[in-house]
Image 1 (cartoon, rainbow, N blue to C red):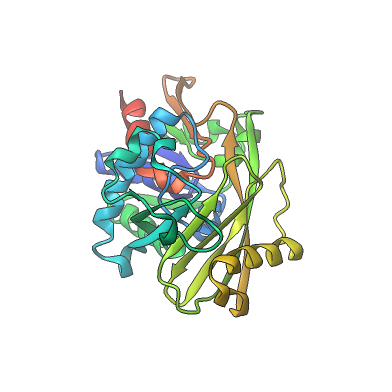
Image 2 (image 1 turned 90 degrees about the vertical axis):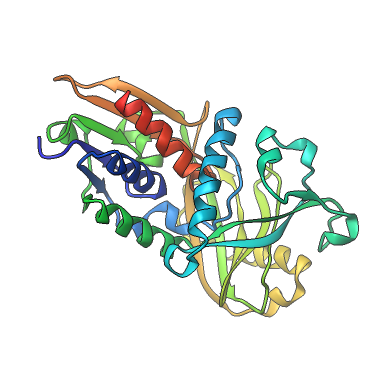
Length: 318
């Protein structure tokens, strides 16, 4: 055995899980089909908020644990990619949220005249907003500083990893559908438009979890990430021009200056949703090893990454 653990998957969940295991003293390797900037995580907006994830009770606890870490990382946003930014969740009321909301400092119900655009209800908050390309590079560096190794390698069978480490952690996201296989996994397509930031400093969301369309914009210094969609079962990775135009139009209803902003690029990612929610389960491997499945985080992988990583490490080492 050349390692204590191999984490398969190099997105935010895989990086967080590998880092927690390394912090607990294990020799850890990450095997990832893609570079960190080629993962689904790199396409995320990404605002901390428990969105499209189950089971709800566990997700709330995982999200709060992650929130605390992001608040610490926000002390050095240039390095970590994490900033604390004010904004508005429209069409949302406090009474409609889980118990986790009571522990989010500063989360408050807004008066109708405080909610922008054609909305009359909403919540105000100052939350972690994460520049994912910067953040993923930061996480990889943090993991490697702990002695971890990141290898770009496609895995076709977990036995490949089990031959080299007694602990294998499956953080493969949507790829677990074929690799496990798990037919309960389904893609939820998200399309984004990145434009030059016309001077917007606050984020905005109006997201109906039951709808295929959402409206949000997230400021990252000189650029603004506009969204979005939540199209279940749609696996198209190419951007749709009509969808892009509709995203810009919806965002411009809230901030008209967005309509004239220069488009920089289009992004598409497939969220790894799963019937029954996140799978976190340990199964034995031949020879006495252990395989921990840790996937199915839907649209909230960034939000729950660190709480989930701690839980997966407890399961792996318990």
